[in-house]
Length: 221
Image 1 (spheres, helix red, strand yellow):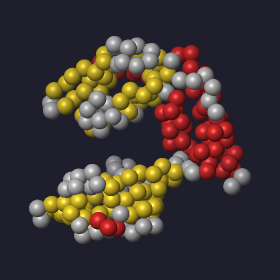
Image 2: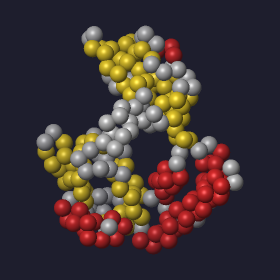
Image 3: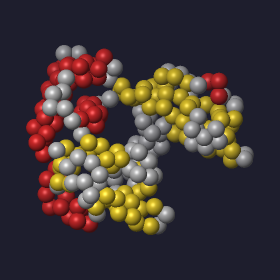
């Protein structure tokens, strides 16, 4: 992590293009039928209990079994791979891109992911903090919990087996937690973001600067 961060460059990037571009891919092989068009506004799952499904994006049929895939993020369909309409596609084939407008909190999280040490999920599985770490988080809060390489900090739950996961990154405090206990996380997705203790003032400067800059921008239109 660098001691110096070019705030103007980072913020300029987000000001000029305050969006995240989310690719939507085929969940499995099958024949595709699109349910949206380029330029369509789509909504993510919503409701207090996440009981209102997102906008249906496409239907994919395999062995006469159609499955509707709904949006997991809100935004606008910025590009649609219309050549796949009515065609058989392989799992993972890109079908469309959704342009998602970033909120201030998401922009801060995006910048922090560039400056924190990110510890990723080794496999697609469910994750929990180890009992010791969870206890310390409950008593003090995550940002008071320090970790060092070799610590058993997380439990991976896969195929009804629990396996300890050992941290192997920079020593520091747990600044950000990106997973929810018991909810599946994709392989390579971030689990935690760790900040060396001496860098905490720098991180706070990032957050303060973004909040002030974004509020100023939005108040002036």
